[in-house]
Length: 467
Ligand code: NAD
Ligand code: UDX
Image (cartoon, protein in one colour):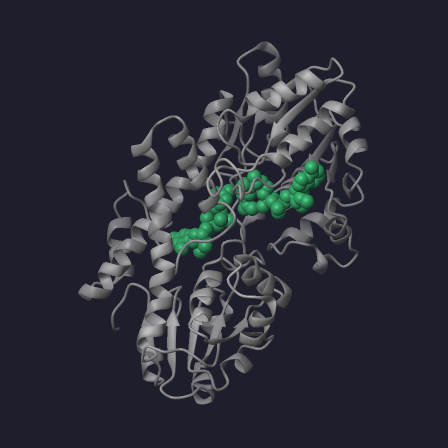
């Protein structure tokens, strides 16, 4: 069986960085080069202070510290890394298209195509090319066409190996993956490539967890997995609205249905809405693919997951406005959390951005505290929406490093991310500092209703009307 000696990964982001760090730490005999065109990002991956890595993930700095400089290298020397590798992972971003055909739904594959053209230009010996990025079903076909038609008579074997890690738990997810999915051609060379990639993962995972499929099933399974997970969140969020009207408690409903082993308990936590770089993008992509095959009913079915998520974010903002006597103009509202979930500094598609935008429309003053997100990121997230100028944003939004300072003279606090530290705060002290009546809107259901009311707060929790 072909044993891989040198791996190149193009794209040193939330997937490429952690995934390759784990591969390098588990496979000391394989040299792993992670390359990116973003010099700043690479410099941070090489920073001698491991607390300065470009991504915050529990356990990441330990894994990087173990392998970096030994068999794990970060650089911008893309061509050299391609040349030296026998296996090349493409792990670049595949955002939703913001222009042209499929705008707002289809995946933008320009970065993928650039990588393929670069590999074709540089490669002078046979390579296994692995799609690690999440891609529309049948992308491998386009990749193959680019590689075969512009290459130097080199044999390229294309595999699909989607990544299922979740941010905040990336290292644990990689070390103890539920499954590894490898799609490839049903030919002798395709089988050899699939086995070569399996062998890499078999360094630390049992063989039974490594699934081999055809390439199209693998590409499609990634979109479907994210669609199913997001669908569960939207389903329970739809019920949260009904709970608030009927005095049912969404946590009790989740528990009751989750005890059914056919349903299961995970991904049934009602929230202010799902965020992250994957769920929305991948569902929109699924919707686009279904439409492009003329499957309108299939497209409509999955689009509803996004519509429900938008409704949930809007509903949360509307409730704040309505509860604060129908006006938030000039009122100080503290945001606890900006990241799309706890234990990450990633804010892509975070619900906080959209809730803030709705409140800014009403001229609220927002003060944000998040333990891991920088002021620059928060301003950039709001600016990206294009609804307010940078100047207006900086006037209305303040970012602070201290949660207590955020609460001082605030009319309300909105909990947007479920950071553990929020549960540990001295909420009595916070209450004392706020304007009265002091409102708290818990979009993550992490605070205790009875305790908060006993402290004197007017307390609102998604999916639960009263304690
Ligand atoms: P990211 O934006 O964090 O990182 C992508 C990196 O690729 C960037 O640093 C960018 O500079 C680099 N890049 C782009 N074009 C390049 C080129 N031509 N040459 C070299 N480098 C280039 O993205 P991410 O979150 O790591 O996601 C990557 C892919 O993995 C996406 O398809 C995403 O859908 C998928 N995915 C993401 C997650 C997640 O949790 N973030 C999980 C599973 C799958
Ligand atoms: C997701 C998939 O879980 C992962 O397998 C895939 O590789 C990438 O996309 P990620 O987006 O990093 O991972 O985090 P995830 O834990 O799935 O959470 C996504 C969003 O849903 C977050 O905003 C989270 O707060 C929210 N969520 C999740 C809920 O609101 N309720 C839940 O019960 C679970």
